[in-house]
Image (cartoon, rainbow, N blue to C red; front, side, top):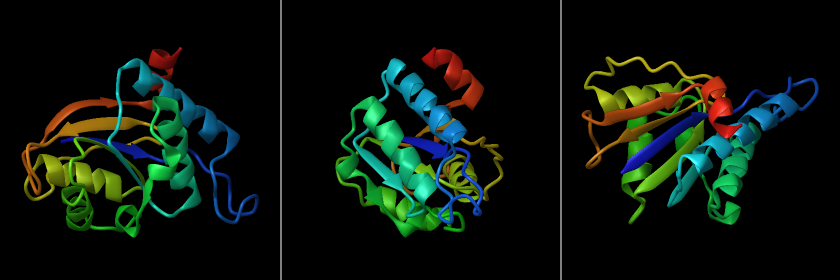
Length: 162
């Protein structure tokens, strides 16, 4: 399974948007990230999003850009900020037939999930930036021996997109 982890884009302050949706900069950053993934030939069999507005928007923008139907996005509490990696892995393991999965989530859970997939005891530290994306390949779940194929910062994704 190819697991793509992305932290949502920059959000509006609560005073401007009580739901803290993506800011115009956040929308532009996520659109560029999606364009880069498309140029790289990335596609998805499943897309997971937290119920938070900024995560849903991130998933929707990337999905639309790479040609994944937005109505197929799975919204789940199991990718919220404080969700344990074990809970998220249970969801991933239940995605029958999905080989390429995007998770549009939050810190610290995306970083903790990356660490969990790569090392036992969560010894790896993967530093995420909003709109950045990493790909971790796993042969079966659960695992602590995934392979980090790449991690691209938002600025790198922007360069690929342009």
